[in-house]
Amino acid sequence: MTGGRKNSRGVVERRLASFVDALEHAFYAEELAKKNGLLQRVDPRVKIVAILPLIVIAALARQLWVIAVLFAIAVAVAMLSSVPLGTLAKRVWLSVLTFTGFISVPALFLTFGQPIYNLPLLGWTVTTQGLRAAMYLIMRAETAATFSVLLVLCTPWSNLLKALRVLRLPIVLVVILGMTYRYIFLLLRIAHDMFKSRKSRMVGRLDGREQRRAATASAGVLMSKSLQLSGEVYLAMRSRGFQGEVYVLDEFGTGWFDWVMCVVFFTIAALAFWFGR
Image (cartoon, rainbow, N blue to C red):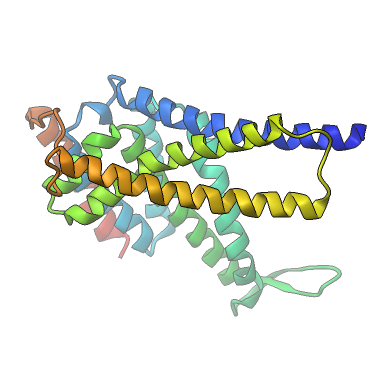
């Protein structure tokens, strides 16, 4: 029974920790967006227009050194924007490296080319071309993800959505993004409250079958609550005059600094495109 209680407490602690981490990540992003860094000072519309080409070029460049230079520029921009490199390492670089590294492993052995190493037990051969293909995949993913995360971390979410709307992104997509962002935390809180309420009414520990039944029932109740809540929110928005357009109180203004940064980013993008062909 003691081991069961420890396991039960471990599950509770892990779920509470994940809930707290999600909220802390959102609050931390909002705090970063309020700092007086390089990207924070740039108009959100300019940031999107300037960074998006760098993301595309990083994903399509054919020269590895060009991708490496873009990655170094992304790191420099992060430092000038007061974004800690430890944050990028934990939340972007390690996760992207793990995912893309796992995907790129077959390329090491399946790509035909000059052999450079043989695995002792399996007899598989690592080729130079395979290693190069894996490095391309990892560097492209790391660079594109770094630029994307910098854009999100250095821009308040509401302003980012408004900038997307100003740039003629379909309004349906903008509303879906905004509602999804809010609903994630709301559903996390509802799930946390449901789990805590059920745990406070339990004596002892359920067996595996009962745990699976309770988890399935909780998922069904959570889905039912989310559907009911979405209908209530929609009716509340319609009663307040919502016609599909999202309005934000902050007004955008483009100054000389925005135009200078736009020229700098476009120059970098043009050079990267030319040398990365």
